[in-house]
Length: 276
Ligand SMILES: *[C@@H]1O[C@H](CO)[C@@H](O)[C@H](O)[C@H]1NC(C)=O
Ligand SMILES: *[C@@H]1O[C@H](CO)[C@@H](O)[C@H](O)[C@H]1NC(C)=O
Ligand SMILES: *[C@@H]1O[C@H](CO)[C@@H](O)[C@H](O)[C@H]1NC(C)=O
Ligand SMILES: *[C@@H]1O[C@H](CO)[C@@H](O)[C@H](O)[C@H]1NC(C)=O
Ligand SMILES: *[C@@H]1O[C@H](CO)[C@@H](O)[C@H](O)[C@H]1NC(C)=O
Ligand SMILES: *[C@@H]1O[C@H](CO)[C@@H](O)[C@H](O)[C@H]1NC(C)=O
Ligand SMILES: *[C@@H]1O[C@H](CO)[C@@H](O)[C@H](O)[C@H]1NC(C)=O
Ligand SMILES: *[C@@H]1O[C@H](CO)[C@@H](O)[C@H](O)[C@H]1NC(C)=O
Image 1 (cartoon, rainbow, N blue to C red):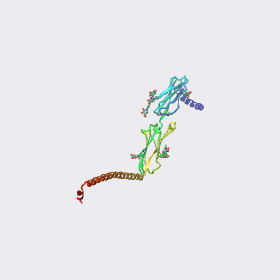
Image 2 (cartoon, rainbow, N blue to C red):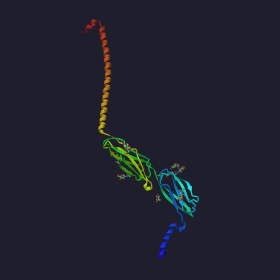
Image 3 (cartoon, rainbow, N blue to C red):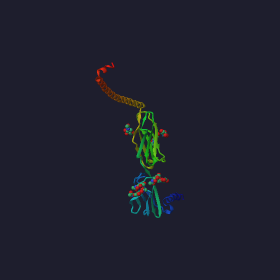
Image 4 (cartoon, rainbow, N blue to C red):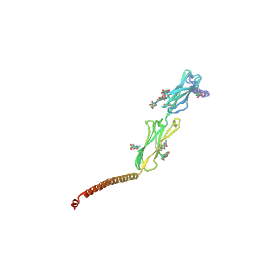
């Protein structure tokens, strides 16, 4: 009696598992996908299959475009090419065998790599001790909650931010002060970590930007030099002009004197001596 109980339990369980509802569900449906993490607008293969010997209908349900690539003559499997995804989606394979329909689903994660990572320094040139802002944006990245943006100075991490998935765009900003003249080579790294979705890590780095930092002294010297040069130039131009004007004036006076002298000489001697 105890041995019968021991045997009957697993048998009942087995019957329940493989043939519930009076043994009609005696088949299974499988879904195989070439990829579970798919890049936007990519195409990939999906195979729907069953162990049912003679399935009536079978196929793949999806909101995306699909085409049948290959098919088993008895309809035991169908291979599809699924294309043009832009959003996360669910694939459903279904088969009907002996008046019963079964389905199996698979979730597909769509990603968009960080292709456009832009770093901006505002303002791009400062005086030592002045504040500036470093701003990095990554456009059209999916899924946003897998993205981390890191601001770098050389190889040193200044700040990183992982996104919540609710932001409209990925941006990280940092206010800083230029304390020295050197070492202001900045860049921004975008890291899309698809490992939780069964993928890998995709990294992308922005073009580096160099902050121009000036000494305040140097700026003053520059101003002084410019003022001195302007004054010298002014003096030079003025003296040239003055020389020219004086020269003209002197020339006219000389000719004027000759005129007076000639007139004087033309005067009769008596008149000439009168004013003496
Ligand atoms: C689809 O899957 C079935 C079952 O695993 C397999 O027998 C069949 O060869 C596959 N078809 C293709 C085209 O790979
Ligand atoms: C499916 O493909 C057709 C053209 O082949 C296109 O017009 C349609 O927008 C596509 N649908 C989706 C969801 O990509
Ligand atoms: C891909 O989908 C977009 C809309 O999402 C559609 O405009 C385009 O025609 C589709 N391309 C193909 C080749 O199906
Ligand atoms: C993808 O999802 C966004 C919102 O998350 C929606 O605006 C857009 O229409 C969806 N695109 C497709 C092709 O379903
Ligand atoms: C697919 O996603 C849905 C939610 O959208 C979730 O309930 C389900 O468990 C997921 N399936 C698998 C196989 O991960
Ligand atoms: C972000 O920065 C913290 C330290 O501030 C560091 O522990 C963490 O590993 C960084 N994350 C990434 C993804 O680089
Ligand atoms: C950075 O400075 C600007 C003003 O220049 C201010 O509006 C902003 O809140 C600051 N951001 C941070 C993160 O401190
Ligand atoms: C700035 O750093 C990048 C890499 O970190 C390097 O390729 C580039 O040559 C550096 N630029 C200067 C002017 O040092």
